[in-house]
Image 1 (cartoon, rainbow, N blue to C red):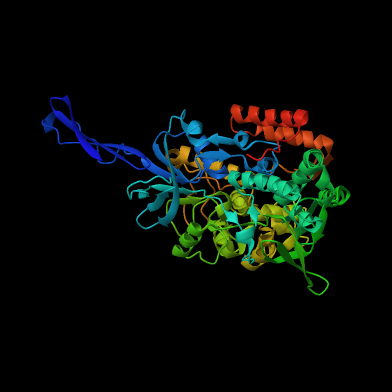
Image 2: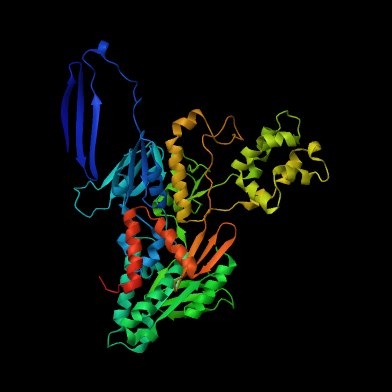
Length: 577
């Protein structure tokens, strides 16, 4: 529905305003008609004051971090997501057993952005497709109400920020989609919590046999990563601290099994943490089966294949299954990747500035994307040419020192390579390539330079799909948008190896601040920078303090701490609501 409104603001100027209302919100637009007195009117160039439209897809860690740190008012921001809140996902395992309530880890997006000096609007909808040619995204409202055929709409953009996260990866295992629980969203955690109570209530019925009760109370977790391990630990505590008191007749029938395809759980952690976690799970009575891959799932049985001992296939009955084995791209992302010739990748490939390769003004961050780091060997000839300023065909130490900072910033794998070789700088690498030559007399030709750096690309690693990475990427991209115009005039990035001038911004660099693994029984493990490992009860209290401080608002911080305090005093709530 649209209506025209004519405003006479001055004798010489007429302004036509159009007010439109529709699904998902309202749109107010205006246009200046030609002034009656052209001689006395000052007309700005077309589009001079027009704000750039930024469309953000997603309200997870990456998208929310971008919105919180965007401070430049020269953008018109539209947020599109089926979830109108931000969820503190590291506490999802706690929500599954009632240690923390779902509302305590959620913060409304509208509340988070309403006080910003940037114009931000939100639409609760799901992105269906992305058209990079016409610069439009097609969306569909998630509202179930009748919208008179107006549930679908398109939004154009100047900049697109894709932060849609990822979905659970089933590896096309038969029966998983139909029978397993996942743990990616708040709704997933709530369903798991209901299912746990359902299992105990069913097992308490007098009409069942002990065999049927054992099956119903067999909880299976697939995936020995941080999420699977933490859920198994939370479930063990919930059962032994709370449920066995309420269901004394079935307490001896409960069994928790953790399946992991590799040889150990928590493979991304230090071996000391892995060993402690495995030993603790054995002591707690959690059935840990490593080297076991799930090949089929039915509504009552799981089939596994032993990756050793000849690949023996066995089956086990179960009552509830939680699948936590990694992530995969969402369908809309997979379709978009095919459009831009990235169909063979597992996630959207971006450059070091988070721009999607093969596109113009599209950025991707968080779990839906991966940074494709430039290889040194691909640019080795250009690096040599850029450093060899006198075109002598050889590189001297002085020439290399003038470019070394830009090279290390552009190719971080070189710095890691030097660190592993226990070399202080590229100059030391050059000296090593020349044997006993003195620093002043070192000169390398292109082949010697290539040989010296031939193993540097072996240090390249993809960033982990964690909340920590996504949050840092969102903060980085927001900073780039805040200073876009400034850095256009005064670039601050490294020298362009394959061209002239400098990059506008410094490339994204991830800083690892450590990681936690709660192991149940008020014990946790932490691996912090500097190879510092902490395990035990004191580490659990460190976990409490860090996760409380990382909440996005004082409201959620108070609620989470309140939930922890309530659990200490009264136990977890086992009501089926």
